[in-house]
Length: 600
Image (cartoon, rainbow, N blue to C red):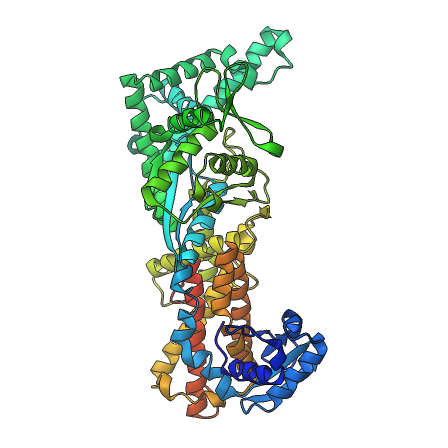
């Protein structure tokens, strides 16, 4: 939050008045936003520190109001029980907020000694299918959080771990061998990850047909789970053999695997480019899946793990139960690989903190992983965090990759941009070329998608409605973007009229209207919103703040004409307020990885 100078004077007065309180040397008061509808720009909540003074909160509030009433930069105070609402002089309010905009924006950065090196892993797709709406939420959360953490001063390393091996990858490969007829992305005109995903769907259709025939021929299997019957099918046996051949380094299988994975990686790259994602390092499970076994053997020798009667290696995790870390045949389980990969990432980057952006169905897995790493004695294991997020659904229902009913990421991007393009055309700017319209629609459509996915706390299972998210009115990304473009339009019109301002010559004291002061007071809390969002690792905190700020600006714009104000000095001051609003809103959207078009 902006540093209001009257707070320092208030603290000095309180130290004199309550000398017996022995306040800490660095003690301060953090004003809060004054509730809407009340008289004041700021509120001091005395419940938060009354114990320090050994005073009833309402009596302390009365003393604070008395001190402030003598301050020359305070126009009025209003005590409501333990709260003191404060009305500042315009000169003091703007001096400590919008007139010091560079300092206000810089205040969002943490002190250097609080900045950390943070490794954040997200996306983690499989190479047997294109990315879908679930990946889009994951990617959006990951990239926005990385950007937010950088914005407040942390060093951030963005990591992707791609699952490019295993039985599910072999399913697409088998289907390609049987149904592909030599198809390529070039020959079909189909994006590489989509082409491979098409064969994954065809595989599961063929497998379902074979399972149905098997159960019809052998009625005693009718009640058996399909997964239990996988190796009873010819297709399942062929797939299992391909996995064994891959692990044994069969050259033909490896060549097909490399070719199809190459197609998928090319497709993923295009998806990431459109979202604006750039990873610092991509790990491949084909290179890491054997990691962890040596660590388990070392832990077994040290008594961290024990061997079960059947030969499996287990770890006692207390209330979470026992967890197998090596099967009885000596092969790894998934958590074994995660143990090894986590150590690999630590050794590669030595981060102060590691964060995984993974769906909430994996909460127990990460609780176990972190507990095992602590038992192994890694001191840094206390700084491992799972950012769990809920499922995202569309009004049309849930998604199923195997049935080909997923909401494809690329199709969703195209739909969002098409909706944005329709909205732009309806607004009827006849002087804009189709190319310019398309550029605007890309920024608006992708921004609307990201904003809506970030609007909710990550833990929330949410419904995503493309039509609602693209509206230019309401709690949407385009609403905030539109406030920014409106400000750009005001600046353009001002230049056409020869109206300009010098920041150090603006007479901010002219801005005494309620809407003007309310916006400036809210702007003061931008640094606090950035830091709170980063501390909670929750971009919805920043989204909510930007919506409030855009609404405050629009109230100002509606009630306080900028270019038709009664004199040039007032026009310049309001123009300066609008420019500051644009800078803060644009910085906030950029922090969320959302762009701003020149017009809408």
